[in-house]
Length: 120
Length: 146
Image (cartoon, rainbow over all chains, first blue to last red; front, side, top):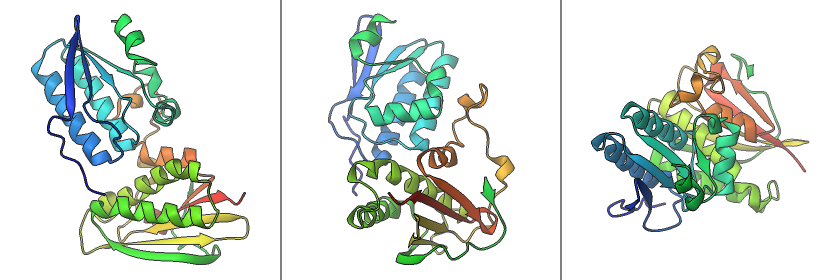
């Protein structure tokens, strides 16, 4: 399985006071690609104190404990920077991982982007 | 947690055996191959492949990264075993094993913020049986035959 280049793969879109991060292309199954993208999100949060970031995960089809851990790291980083980091549009199998690991207790997760944007 | 110092017992017929060097790039193709074997043999429905793949990914990653410290020359041995009422996958590394007490309970309030330690918990959730032999350097995961 060939890891894809992550150049220009993540898209940041301002919607009011919120920045929505999403994938420019769909169907991410190789976690190496996903982890690289999460590193880019970390850089984004690092550079912007207090940023309100919504991560639309609808195209993520696979996530392991490494990916879950990286997302927890992003949430911690965001809190340290005085920001907000929320998730939306998780595929059912990915949502199940958050439920199983009880990560729904620390993450704000929404069914749709609209719902999530309304919560900020 | 079933955690013992001994080698795993005879669990049934070995229907596939594969040894790989410790390189994480080799995990994905091996998981695809193992999943295909399980589906072709009718041991799992195709729709269930994703959760089994996740468990194998986690177990192989632990074996390569934590067990063999990503030393390429160290091998990971994988066997698919067909028992009388279960199928099993045994994954064995060349490491010294681990301390089961050191695995955090990631579901406590504080530990929810941990960035690691969820792999084994995910495996335990999605498989019917998880056992550790040789002080943890061999993990055996299994599902009941339907």
